[in-house]
Image 1: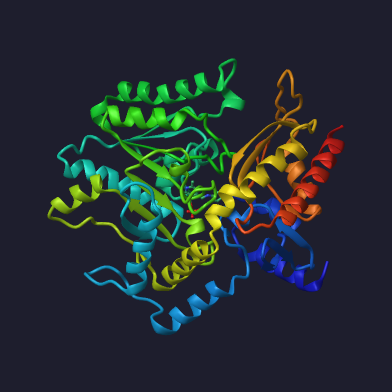
Image 2: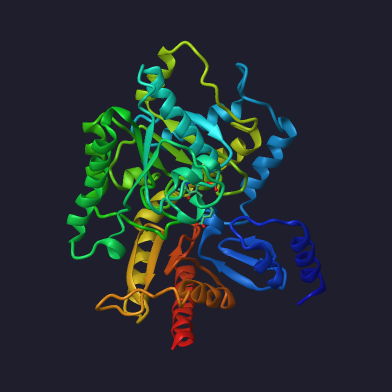
Amino acid sequence: MSKHTQDIQHIDAQHHLHPFTNTSALNAKGARIIEKAQGVYIWDSEGKKMLDGMAGLWCVNMGYGRKELADAAYKQMQTLPYYNTFFQTSHEQAALLAKEIASVTPHDLNHIFFANSGSEAIDTIMRLVRHYWAVKGKPYRNIIIARDNAYHGSTLAGASLGGMGGMHKQGAPLVPGIEHIRQPYWYGEGGDMSEEEFGLACAKALEDRILEVGPDNVACFIGEPIQGAGGVIVPPANYWGEIQKICDKYDILLAADEVICGFGRTGNWFGSDTFGIKPDIISMAKGLSSGYLPIAAVAVGSRITDALMAHDDDFHHGYTYSGHPVSAAVALENIRLMKQENIVDYVANDIGPYFQSELRKRLGDHPLVGNIVGTGLIAGIALVKNKAPKEFFGDDINIGLICRDHCFENGLIMRATGSRMVLSPPLIISHAEVDELLDKAVLCFDLTLKSIS
Ligand code: PXG
């Protein structure tokens, strides 16, 4: 290992607390230092090249090294590096970006509130939907229903709203007024039910919970169209339609967390389009700027904005960097590039179908693979001990981490969540690069099988 790498690792170990990391375990090993990136590839400080099958952390949708995005930031920094959007001021970048976002959001989601991270966007949704009901004269309608194994960020509100047990155990007490229902994970939890029956059962869990807590106490239901960090859980085809019907029946707001699904990942601009739902409010981040700068947004529909505008008071909420001009300029350029390169169409009709069908062709019969799900350029692969009868790995083998480590060693970034391997490559990935990704994946699944036999 080079002296340069060792020096950075040493400094990192001494001073850097990493997110979602066992610090002492990391420091004993030394962090992998990433140095540069281009297209779908990243290089570490030892010169090792890796194909990034995760687009960073589900975000570098337009790929690395886009000069247009760097130029947009440089230009904006020279003209107006910062100004706020509080106190009755605005600037061109925030206004134009709000218009651009509204041009691609589904339904009537035409007003945009800016934040800097998905977690902040989720806090905004929670405060806004509760405020909506207060403005409507029903402040007691404040319960938000979310799902087990959902990920909605890591601030106190996001961690409380998400359904991750490990997160709930730390930093308690959690934010009150949140209920969790079962997730629509058919392969893992569907038992003997058909996919359709299971979809209905999971939607009915929402209705049951609404009736249990009282419809007049519920503000909102929130879900990721496809759960990302939970392992890429694609719900049964009938699930979201049923959820929409139940929300309509009880007059409950429907929120979609589009932080991963948004901006083309599923082959439409938003996951809500893919599943045909009309949410009242959505969050977005990641792909909004392809991760080049932190920026997030909440798109709000007319049901909520009409109520807010009829109410003669401030919404007491906002961030110093809401609509930051440099982040906004980069996001604007990112959306312009997406439109110019017809990237959503490429995912829907070309590279997405190719990736999904090749993935199944190359890995579907692998002895470790129980099930593959996904659409567009997002996929989840269940690793199992036995395919039929279905048997999952126990706690004695961390199969996901074994597989992930083989991937790292062989130049592929693939993430493990439990025993599910997940993929979410940059949307600009070429056919040849998909082939390379799958060649590497097949090799690493073979090596994983060898490691445990
Ligand atoms: N909602 C969803 C659906 C997300 O995926 C957030 C909110 C929070 O966004 P910020 O920008 O505050 O991180 C996310 C973020 C993982 C992983 O391990 C996933 C996320 C973040 C970190 C790790 O898959 N998603």
